[in-house]
Image 1 (spheres, one colour):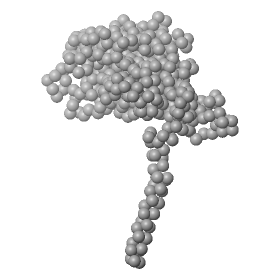
Image 2 (cartoon, rainbow, N blue to C red; image 1 turned 135 degrees about the horizontal axis):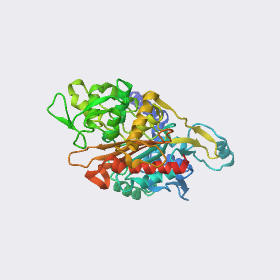
Image 3 (spheres, one colour; image 1 turned 30 degrees about the vertical axis):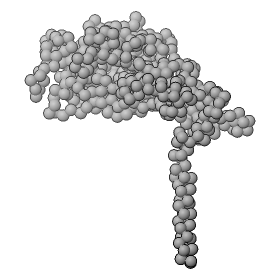
Image 4 (cartoon, rainbow, N blue to C red; image 1 turned 120 degrees about the vertical axis):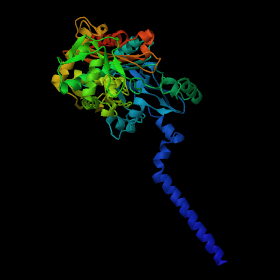
Amino acid sequence: MQRQIRKVGIGLVFAFMAVFLQLNYVQIFAAEEIASNNANVRSLLREYSIRRGDIITLDGTRIATSEPTGERLKYRRTYPGGDLYGHITGYYSLRYGTSRIESAYNDQLLGDTGVISMQDIQDQFLGSGEEGDDVRLTIHSRLQEAARAALGDNRGAVVAMDPQSGEVRALWSNPSYDPSPLASHNGKEAEQYWESLDPASPTGPLVSRATSLGYAPGSTVKVITTAAALETKYEPGSVFEDPFELELPQTDETLTNFTKTACAGGQIDLRTALEVSCDTTFAIIGMEIPTETRQMAEAMGFNKPIPFDIGTEVSIFPEVGEDAKPFQAYVAIGQGDVIATPLQMALVAATVANGGEVPRPQLVREVIDPSGGIVDRIQPETLGTAMSSETAREVTDMMAAVVQGDSGTGQSAQIPGVTVAGKTGTAQTVQGENPHAWFIAFAPAEDPQLAVAVIVESGGSVGSEATGGVVAAPIAKQLLEADRQIRGW
C-alpha cells in the first residue's frame, strides 16, 4: 500500500512540476509571442479599440485614416487616396498584417512608443479613448498626382527627391493597388481582393517598381562611370578613339554603339561622349578603371541596402576581374549584370546635384501626437561623400549638355528659362523584348531643387523604337515643371 501511495505521490509531483513549467513558459517566455499572435482575440480587440494615427502628406492630405465601425472591432482603416499611395502607406489588414509605412511605423501609429505625452495623461483621466500618433510624410500630394499623370498607362516608376535633404517628394509605381479592400473586416472580401493582385508574382501590383524591383539601368550608369573617370585620371576634355565598333579583348566579339555608327568620327572627348551617350567611349573607360567605377557606384549606394523608411531591393554593381575584360566594358555602360532600382538612380542624380554628398533618402518628416505636438522629427543625414565638389560641378555641366546641347540625347527634357541636367538610358533586356527607357535629371543645374528618376518598362507605347530621350525624358520634364509650379523656384 505504501509503495502505491509513494508512486501516486511521485506522479503528482511530476504533474505539478509539468504544470509549473508550462505556466512559467506561457507567462514568461511565450507571453510576447502569444500576445502578438493574430489569433489572440483579446490582443486584436485591444489594438482595434485604438484610433490608429493618420498618415499625412507633406501638404496635409490624409491618405490613411481610421473610421469608427460601431462594431466589436471599433475602427477600420481606410485609404482615401486609393492606389495613388498604395506602395507608400502599405496596408493594415486583419488577414495580411502590415506593410510599408503601416509596418515601419506601426508602434507610432498605435501610440505605443513608450513616450508619455500630455495627450496620454488626458486620455487616462478623462477616459477619452486611446489614440495613436500621426505620421507626416515627405511626399507632396500634388507632385505624386503629377507623377501618376505623367507616367500614364505605362508600366514603370517615377521617383522625385530633394537632393539636399533627401526627402522624397513623389514615389509612384504603376501598376499599383488600393489598400482599402485589404483593410476590410470581412475576411472573404480581403482575400478575394488579395488574390486579384497576383500576390505570388514578383512583378505584380503589390510590388513597388520604384523601390523593390531592379532593372538594367542602361546608359544612366555613364554618370557613375564619368564621375569615376574624373576622380582618377581623366578630364572633361580627355580624348578617346572613336571606332565604329570596339574590339573586345579575350574574345572575337565587338561592341557597337546604339546608332550602329561612330559617335563623332575619328576621336571624341569625354564631354561629348556623355552628351551623345557614346557606348564605345565608356566601354574603353570601364576596361581602364573597373575597380574605381565599381567603388564610385558603391559610394552612391550600390551593393548594400539603402537605408530607407520602407526598405528597398539592393542594387547590384558587380565586381569583374581582369580575366573578363568584355564584362568590364558592358558594366560601365549599364548592361551586363548591373541592376538598379529607380530609387537608386534618383540617388545617383541627387548625389551629383548635392555636390558629391550622398543624401539619405527620407520618406517621413515627423511623428505628431493627437494634441499636435511633435513626438519625433527626422533630421536629414548624409550617407557619405562619393566625389569631390569639383567633380560634381564638372559632371553637372556635362549632364546639362545632355539636355541643352545641340547633340544631346535628352533634349525632350528642356524647360524654357531653366537649365536641366540629365542623362538618358536605353537598357536592353531579354532577347526579343523591347528596351526599357530611363531618364535621370535634376534642376535647376545652378541651384538644384529636385532630382528625378524615371523608368518606362519595355518602352511603353513606343515599344521597340523607345529611347530614354524620347519616352522617359518628357515624363521627368513634367515632374520638374510641376515642382517648379508648386514651390516657385
